[in-house]
Image (cartoon, rainbow, N blue to C red):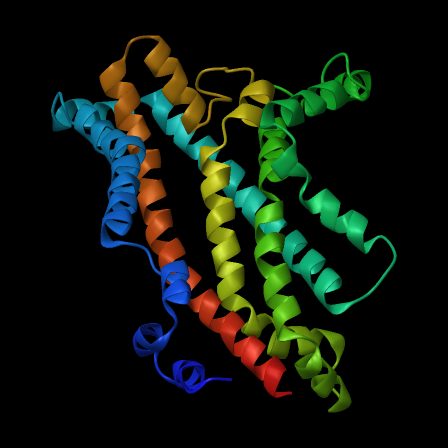
Length: 306
């Protein structure tokens, strides 16, 4: 090994690049004009597809004044859509929280038959169109579906009612919590849980005192993403809702109806509520994501030290 190579290995990156052979330096750096071009293209892309549409939503929402805006979001159908959206999220998110924690704990901490099948099933909503998911529920619980006659005989309604909307929301959102916790739990390993069991802790005590505190930021991150998707879901909910105004329309469906009726000010006013939710979600996502990365780095360092 040459002296220049040894020096490059121990010096900081900028100094090492100066001492590196020309071919290596060319392979690991880019000309200034290339970097500036890539940054410019990225900013143009973000401006065109993110910043401009976001600004236009709020501009159109307040274009006709504050009174029109307040009237649009306090109108009876809008209030009903808001409450239905919140109801679906309040039911779906806790259920997916319980499922996500249970599935992640089982997959990360135990070996069992069907583990790969469970992982595949968790990813199913990512690979299946939400519209197809809605149609599945229609075929199962609809009037002509498998349980349609039984539900009708017992005066129970799933499709074109709140239960169908909740089921569709649960389906499209259940991977988020599990998918955030599984890699975090796998990176942390099982040493702390095993130590707790050796010291006499029960399974529940180990979970509440050891496992849960170690994954709290990843859990919160998954809940934030799950809630954002639950409130903004359109495809699956559109199929099972029936678009009954004031009864089975969530916020995205209500926005579509207003826009199709050429009530542009009202549609953008209601859309601004979802846009505000998206902005809040992004801020929370950024904050929690940093803590999750720190937690994973600490877990990997602890695993390497062990």
